[in-house]
Image 1 (tube, rainbow, N blue to C red):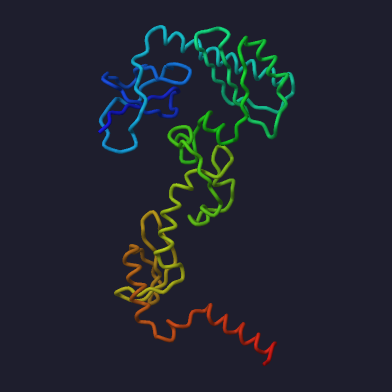
Image 2 (cartoon, rainbow, N blue to C red):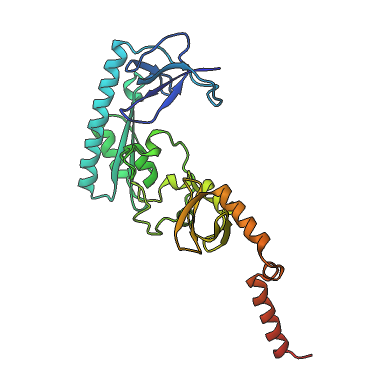
Length: 304
């Protein structure tokens, strides 16, 4: 059973899980997180505790609490990132480039000539930024790396609130972007208007993927809308589905009232209605009758 803690580099940002080792940390403590460019300062947002779930093995070990020198370096790097972002915006506007700066990352390994400024930007198409790189290098006195990202990656870096009122999934816990299609919205009976089912990035909301398996399984087992069912107190027809509640809405044939029953009861009522149907009704689906009509028409057009 592993012992796990969670840290974040930004307030309300993505959570990163670490192995606390033998130390004890509290929520709000500033700790050191091992990265490729050296230890970075992060804030503990989840105190260490024992976890029984799988998937937390092989975590990086926390490098210990952050000292005054680490906090001073982190403050300096944050100021440099803000200065680099402001300088990049000014030079982009001066050169009239169709670019939008999203985020800036400042990597400082302690050596002046090894400082690296990574600038993430969005653009409608490929941009020739060779002049911009040289001007930024002279202004910031550092190596420059410009990286063009898509709309989803931009929303992940910037963060924000989704239509549900909570922080964006991509900015908190979502690691990989899975493909989302308009068909998933249709299966969930959502309006096919992209403006109503799009997220902050302008693409279809990632949360459409979460409940898609539930709706698919419900559609496979539940009686379709318009199908006849037989309840204990009379027959009815299915007029609606309530997938989150795992139930269906049935309108009774006798008095026209509607009632909600569970999926298990609706499936049993469908089987009861099918058992009460006449053999001729059960063996004559509408599709086969249409096939027989087509065959008869072909025989008239091509007589033997």
